[in-house]
Image (tube, rainbow, N blue to C red; front, side, top):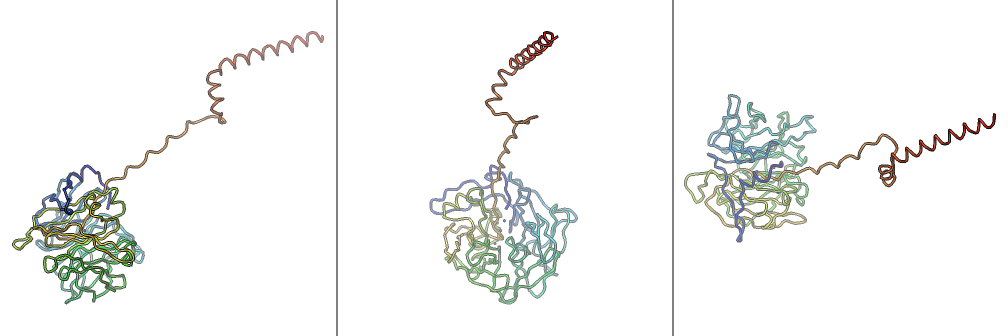
Length: 389
């Protein structure tokens, strides 16, 4: 069917080579991951977390794919299922008086009991975080990074022809925000505050109709757009993500999972797709814009919202790719400016630069002359005293 920390430029560009795009941007195939269906991150170490075939991996900035959370206490769940994930940014939940731990991974648990599984940042511990009832399945997960939902974990679930939206705090306490949202599914995301009237809302796509909805913290759903993209089962808009601040100047690439599936027009390749920041800029994409990608063919548009919203084509040509999960963004590291050198230490009152230079050149002769004149004065005083006697 999706957030951001800085990493080194050269390494990630090795994963995201430039692609000619005179007639529109085109995805480049990157790392191969068996059964890939989701990606998120980067983590604080710069790695992306990747899910495929019931297993987790870390893809570091050099392009090396390493198994993750495979030990006895690790993650071994829902093989063959689309158990989408979201990585914790470490937000504080004021209503619960606790905070999520950065780099922990939360995944949909699609078997009984339906709910959320937590994997520790080190990958050596996993287990049930919360159980979710009243739904027949789960199909979306994202962290609130704006605070409009009190930095909680948001999860969508199927309920007949509607969607239930859950908000889960850092202690695992669950609140149902609505059970009557429109049917949605896929890589969901929370809009930044500057996204027009939809800032702070949960943005979720419906692949069947091709519509994109905004779900407010009150549970009220509003249609944002229905892009001119293919729609239908395994075809329509599957994933959304927001271009982060600074991406147009420091961005490296956006990533999307291309899952291999037998048969159909879009069988996929089990590769991690990538699109460079330069390609997005050439298409007219701006920071804060919503990117929306389809499942079948991985076509993509951007949605720019202020007083009203407009749709911008980005990837116009459909391919055999089969998109799944979230959109993840990487950025260049910020090099801190060197601190100015401290002024030289002085042991006494400051001296104007001109006088200091003069003293440096003539200090010793002046001292000698001073001593000589002092001796002359002393001899003169003694001579006067003798005469007085």
